[in-house]
Length: 288
Image (cartoon, rainbow, N blue to C red; front, side, top):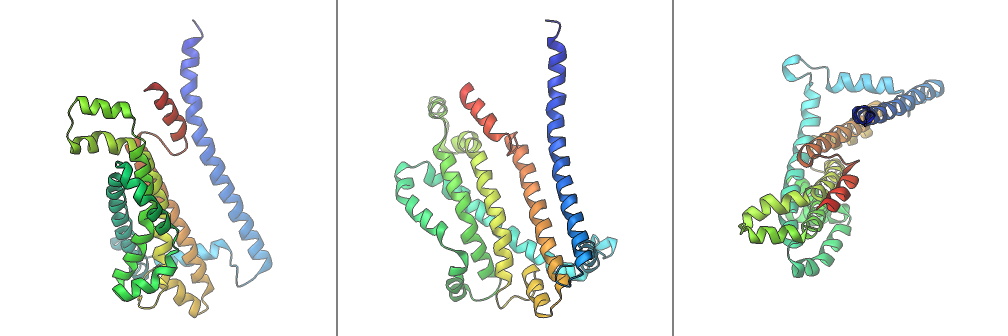
């Protein structure tokens, strides 16, 4: 009996140190990899593989050395980064809204799921570049075609995961909702969406990665006059390898920051992170 308070006070602190140690180890691996890259690049002296310090300095001078009133963004950053982020955000929001809405409708109907599942799997398997000629004919070159290519490929992970989450709602909770005579809107808001939220965010994370890739791909096509993909092709045509590497580093940083932000939103809404979601989900399932 006398040892229980000590053990109870020690366990939370030990649990808090585990994520800190994991984060430190991840940053340590990144620092070691960058240091090795720096040493090898300087020793080899190849123009094709510049050191990371030169790449970061060039990216800073190119995009982030602007005035304070413009949030340190240069005119090149306004013409390069902001248009791409705008296209990506619009495509991600459209894909998310459409995927969640259609996923709930399909997932809550057994017949609709059985009929639509082969079509969904077929559409998801179609490579996005293969549909570019179709989108060009329908929308012509420009922003509508870029958004269509992003939304069409990014909607499927959200739709399929939402449908699976809507199908996995606890039948006991559905019976309680029927006893309480909840309206369809109340069932959607208080039962279906909270139950499917972990699966929805799993689809959103996949969709976010696809949006970043498809955003760059759509800007590589003719008819694009700005954006990160346009900057990449322009630098390649001028053999500006330092800018090419700066664009690649920028894409990696954007992907990391956007995914981290989405994980923070998921943890806030669901009350759990992606790493411990499975264990908590299993314990919740046993408790109900």
